[in-house]
Amino acid sequence: MADLAKLTIADARDMLRAGEVTSRRITEDCLTAIEQAGALNAFVTVTADKALAMADAADQRREAGDDSDLLGIPIGIKDVYCTDGVRSQAASKILDRFTPAYESTVTAQLWEAGAVMLGKLNMDEFAMGSSNENSVYGPCISPWRRAGDDAPITPGGSSGGSAAAVAADLCLASTGTDTGGSIRQPAAFTGTVGIKPTYGRCSRWGVIAYASSLDQAGPFAKTVRDAAIMLRAMAGHDPKDSTSADLPVPDFEAVLKGDLRGKRIGIPTEYREGLGEEIAGLWSRGADMLRDAGAEVVDISLPHTKYALPAYYIIAPAEASSNLARYDGVRYGHRADLHQGEGIVDMYRKTRAEGFGREVRRRIMIGTYVLSAGYYDAYYLQAQKVRSLIKRDFDQAFAEVDAILAPTAPTPAFALGEMQSDPVEMYLQDVFTITVNLAGLPGITVPLEVGGQGLPLGLQLIGQPWGEANLLDAAYALESRASFAAKPDRWW
Ligand code: GLN
Image (cartoon, rainbow, N blue to C red):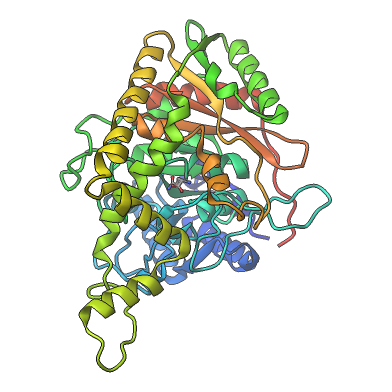
C-alpha cells in the first residue's frame, strides 16, 4: 500500500516538519503507486533515481533547518515542460526523445523550493485537445469509471496525465498548462483542484509553446490550500519571458479564510444557454454554497460569449502554426528517412507529415490559412477584435462583482472515443473555459459532487486580473461547503 502518496501537501508538510516521516518514504510510496498504475498511462517517463536523490537532498536540507512548504514534496510534471536531462516531448512524435539541456523557469522554481520530481505526465500532443487522446504515448485513462460500467473514461485534456496522477494518488500535486481550459477541464473531470493563473503570473520560459498569447502554467492539487502552496512557488517575474509580470507574489495560502461576506459573485446568464440539467443543477447548488459563505450572488452579462469559441479556434491555431514552424527535422527529435534523389524540401515535408499527429496537422493548416494574405483581415484580425470585446465584457462585469461562478465543462467526463466523430464536438468542451484565456484572467476549478453517472463534477470560479488570492479564497469557501471527499474505486 502506497499510503503516503495519498497525503495532501499540507498534511505531508506537517508530518515532515514534525519529523514523523521523511521525503524519501513519501517518494518511495509515490514511486510504488506509479509502478502499480501502468494501466492509467498517466506517467510517461518515471525518474525514479532522480526522485530518490532529490528526496534525500530534501531530507538533508530539512536536517539543516530548512522547513520550506514544498521541501520534500513529490510531484509530477506535464511533458510540455522542458526538464534538464529528462525527456520532454509534449507527447509528440516530432520531438521523439528530445532531452533538453535546460530547465523551464517554473520547474526550476519548484526544485529550488524543494519539490521532488517523480517524472513526466501524459498530455495531448502540443497541448491540443480536451481528452488526452491526441498523444504519441496513447491516451491517459481516468482512474474514475461510470457506475456499473468499465468503459475507459477520459481524464480530460490536454493535461490529462497531470489530473489523473493527482486523482489516483500517484503524486501529491502536479503541473499543467492551460491555453483554453487544459487545467480547469481535466480538474473538473477528475475531482481535483486546478488553477490557471492570470496571463503573465507564471513564466512561460522553457514551456513548449502552443499559443503564446494564451498559454499559462498552473498546478493541479488535491485541495485549494495545496493549489495555493504550489502556485506561490511556480509564480513570479522572469526576465526570460517578456510577458511575465513584474509583480510581487502574495502568500496565497495565508489569505484562505472562506469568508465571502461583502463579496459579490456574478452568474453569467449567457452561459445558461443549452446547458444540460445536471450541470445547471450543479451550478445553482454552487451558487447556494457561495451565498451560504456570505456572498451576494447576482446575474451578469457577458454578451460576446457566443463569439469566443470561433475566435479562439482562429487565434490558437494561428499562433500554433507559427510556433510549430520550428520543427523541421533539423534540430530536434524525429527526422524522416529519405530516398535517393530526395532533397531538403522533401525532408521538411516528410518529417512534418510523419512527426505531427492528425489534430496538430489540422491546426497548422487552419492557422496557416487564417494568417495567409487575403484571409488575414477576414479571420485573424476579426478574431482579435472579438478578443478585445470579450475582454471588455469581463472588465464591465468586474466593475460589479468580485468573482464569477460558471460551469467548467458542459458535460461530465466522457468515454474514450465518444467525441471522435467531429472535431467541433471536442472543441465545444472548451466553451466555458476559453473566454478566460482570451481575456487573460485567472480561473480555478473546484470539485463539488459526484454526479448521476458516478463521475466527479466541478465548477469554475473566474477572478480579476492578478486577483488569485481572492479567487483562491472564494474557491476555499466553495470547497469548505462542498466537502467533496470522493475517491475513485481502485480498479487498476
Ligand atoms: N482544448 C483546447 C484546445 O485544444 C485547450 C487546450 C489547452 O488549454 N491547452 O486548444
